[in-house]
Amino acid sequence: MAKPPISAAAHTVGLRVREFRADAGLSQEELAERAGVHWTFVSQVERGLRNINLHNLLKFAAGLDVNPARLVDGLRPPLVEEQRA
Image (cartoon, rainbow, N blue to C red; front, side, top):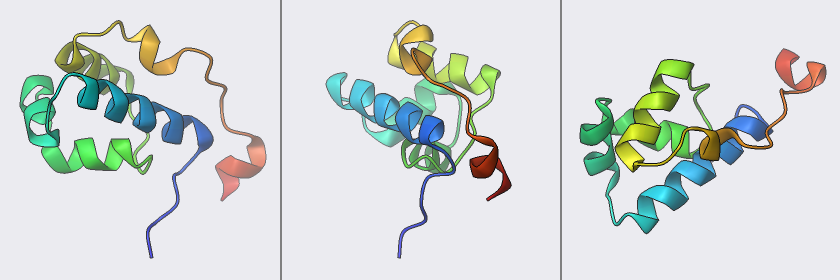
């Protein structure tokens, strides 16, 4: 059984990364190389399993050749109940 995303925000960032990656015709491995991260990290981010920090967000945006704001636009912090889970 697959693990659920750690938050709605992490899930949304992951979906956006996956969408931009697919639109660019990149594999997870290719994005990982461009961003300077391991491909398993790309996979975990895309599934919303990792809380991506600012530096990695910027690396992903650079690797995808998109403005970092496009990855986080409109997101809200997790609810208090979500943070305790």
